[in-house]
Image 1: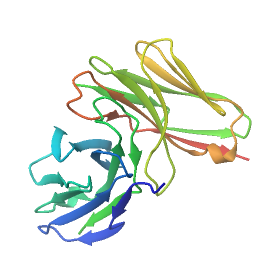
Image 2: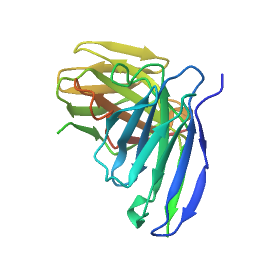
Image 3: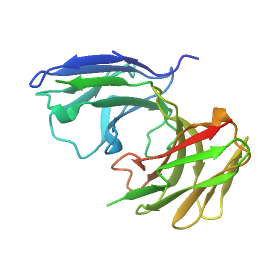
Image 4: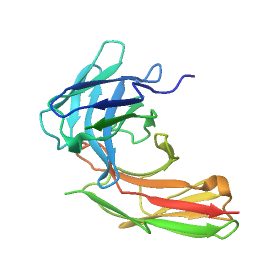
Length: 115
Length: 111
C-alpha cells in the first residue's frame, strides 16, 4: 500500500515568490492535514481538508492557503514568501477527520528554503 | 491555549539502559494523547493513542502511559535502532486546531 507522497521534496525560492506543494494521500483516506516543522517551533498545524472542505485552520497568516481535490489530493500554496517560511512542510492523511482520530500518516515532507 | 511540553529535550542512553520520556500537557477537553516517532529526513510515524487517565499501550520495547496531566513513554532495554525523535501531541475537544505537538525528545541509544 503506497504511503503519503509529497512533491517536490526540496525546493529553493527567493523572498516575494510563491510556492505550491502537492500531497497525494493514502488511497481511501479522505482527510489531509498540513503541518509546518521548524527547529524553533516544532510541528505547527496549518489546516485540514476533508472531502474537499477546509475543516480546521491553524494560526497562520492568509498567505498560507490550500485546497483539496475530488480525488483527495491536496495542494498548499504560500504567497509572498518570507525568510521565516523556510521549513519542512508535512502532509498527513487519515481515514476520517483528525477531529475524530489523531492517527495520522505523514509523508516525508517538502523542505522549503527561502533566500 | 493548548500546550504540550516534552522533557528532556535530548537523552543519550547506553544500549539496554531503560528510561522514560515525559510529556506534560494542558489541552482543553483532551480527546486523545498521541505519540509519534520521527527519524531524520522522514515524517513522523504514529506509535500510540491514549484516551483516558490510567490507560497504557505497549509495542515492543515501548510502553506509553497517561495521567490527568502527563504522559510517559517508557523504553525498556533499548537498542540503537530505537534512536529517533519522539513526539507527543494532544488533541482538544473542539478539534479546531489540529494536533498540538511538543517539540520532541531526541533519543540516542549508544551500542
